[in-house]
Every structure is written in structure tokens, then in C-alpha cells.
Length: 320
Image (spheres, helix red, strand yellow):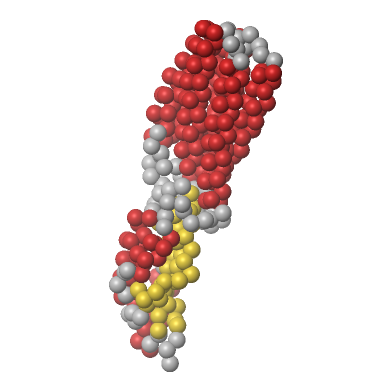
């Protein structure tokens, strides 16, 4: 009588954690440089903002201080992610990058709300501004942000990308402050400063919402946004020997490692055939950046198949 038989479970999930943990020395150097430059310019911008009386400079200084903390979180996350897994942390520390990115996003929201409030007060009661100092500090800030952006550009790490987005918003903020300083110098209309402040706050808020949404998407283990679920199933079904696939679960461990588990239905009776099918499926999954795959095979059992499975299990127990 034909009946379903659990033929084997993929042991690729025995923690080949070297996948996805490539050399991060370049990323770490970039983050360290970014932290040093950001902190130095935070001090410069804070002093410049106090002397000039510019809200946009002070707001950007607050953003820079938050960036120092965000970059330190990013550096810590990258370092911790390289730690080897343990019995109590079987996937290692990869998801720390997602948690750090989520925290960064929350801080961005707080910064944007603070700028909104200050910009409103300055709009209602404009204050005198030293446009010359404002201009010089903003130009220095633009140069610093360009250097940091180049240092962080190109990483696939969500946490590092969140830090990169912060730097881009800082860069745009510096451009806005430069425009405001020039306008104030030639027209004397200081009201443009809180208006630029509003613009900076909107940019910060928009970037923070994007980062938080991406982080939550990963933390709730939704299907990765850049992957078509149906295409993954079709690719698995296209492997010779696969009759059907069900109970598919596809999610992300972090920004650059995807995970899948699925039941593979096959009529192949021999263990050798099943091993070949397994390897072919894994190869197909690589293009989706799936680094951990748990594949449970089910087939119509026959005496030969059962005997081979039992013998294989005995050999594995002896080896362990």
C-alpha cells in the first residue's frame, strides 16, 4: 500500500555559518572613519549654530550627534555579527544589524520631531542669524558628509545602509543650510532658516520610516521584498525528480541572508537520487541568496527505500 514516507531532512542547517560572514574589514574601517569625522563635525556645527543663531545648523548638529550613536551601533552590529554561533544562539548574531537599524530609525523620528517644534517657534518668532558663519560651517559639513558617504557606499548590510541613508540626509541638509545662508546674506530674510529646518525634518522623518519598515519586515519574518515567492516555488519544481513542493516558508535572517524550509514530494526511491535532487535545489536557491535551507523529502515508500533509509541512519549514528 502506498503511503507517504519522510525520506530525509536536509542537514545543511547544521550551521554552515561561514556563509554570509565575509570579510568586513573594509566596512569597519569605513564606519570608524565616519564616527571620527561625524563627531568632530558635530562639535564644529554645534558651536557654529550657537554663534550664528541658525536653527538649521543646530538641527543638523543634533542629527550629527544621533549619527555618531547610530554609526557606533552599526560598527558594534558588524563586529558582533562575526561571532560564531553557539548552542543557545544557533544563528549567531546576524539579526543584531536589524535591531540596530530599527533603533536608528526610532532616533531619527525623535530628531525630526524636535526640529519640527523648533522650526515652528523660529517661524513664529524669527531670530537674527550670522549668515557668514552659517555658510562656512555648512560648506565644511557638505565636504565631511561626501567623504563619509563614499566610505559607507556599496554595503548590502541593512544596518550600514541605514547609516548611509543618515549621511545622505545630512548631505542634503548641508546643501539646504548653504542655500539658506546665501539667501539670508543677500536678502536679510531669516525666516528661510526655519523653513529649511522643516525641510530637513521631513527628509529625516521619511528616511526613518523607510528604515523602520524594512527592519520590521525582517523581524516579522515576512518573505523578502526582492524575491518573488512563486518564482522560488517554480524553480524548485523545475528540478528533475521533484513532483511537488509544499509547506514552503521563506524569510530573511538579516539583510543579506535568506532562509527557507519546505517539503519536497518525490517519487524517487533511492537515497542517491534524493541527495542529487537536494543538491540541485540548493544550487537553484543560491540566486535568491538563500544560505540556509531545510528540505524535508516525502515519497511513496517501498521496502528497498525503507531499508536504505534505515541503514543510512544507522551509519550516521555510528559516525557521530
